[in-house]
Length: 265
Image 1: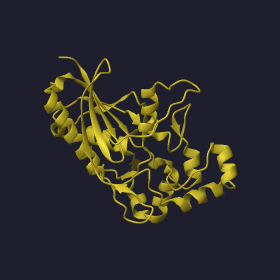
Image 2: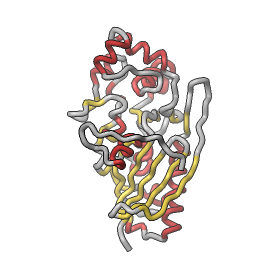
Image 3: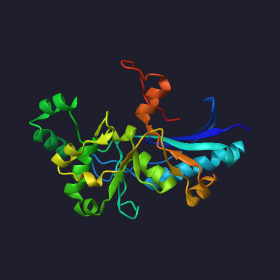
Image 4: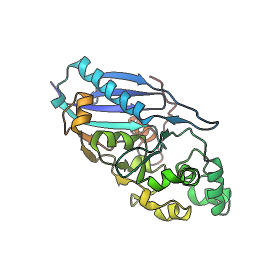
């Protein structure tokens, strides 16, 4: 028997688990769907428990179907939808549902932020593009304004990838790849703390950053039990679906491009 990587593509409508050998050959895959809730116009939320249940169920299906020994799994890694926000407290409990990328509740906060930079045109000239209510920083400002108790209790927020690696390992961290959609210095790989301070968000409530190719930790005993894997199996930081699509297409050089339209299967 060979050695394998267990990869999960956690999208907006489903999770796809894929068992890949060290040569890059896809051996088997499993798809588990989940829903989206729209509690108010413009809002879009998902239950982080649904992401986790889809990950564990699809992992069990892949392991059971292939009869691969858990000792042959080299690591687990996630490629996920980006710009999700799950507020977490100091004990590692989530304080609400996952606000996903398509949620537009923070439209007014986006306008307010751009006005602090003397308007949309100047903001776009500085940042490279304007922002809207679907972007990360406006949503964090929205939480502070409209959910002050959650904001006060937050140790940090996690995105979809960070939440799943936390459920696997017990470590709260965010991949550079996913954090780039919120605001990091791409050279130093540090949060743009000055920007967060300027808009009133406490940088102390930002998660630890980690390289996409680094090990976040090993599977906890409980996570391993649910996934039919071995405790301590390495979990890598991974990244977002956008970067994963670029890397998968081979468009990784300066000026190279690709077309990505998404899939449902």
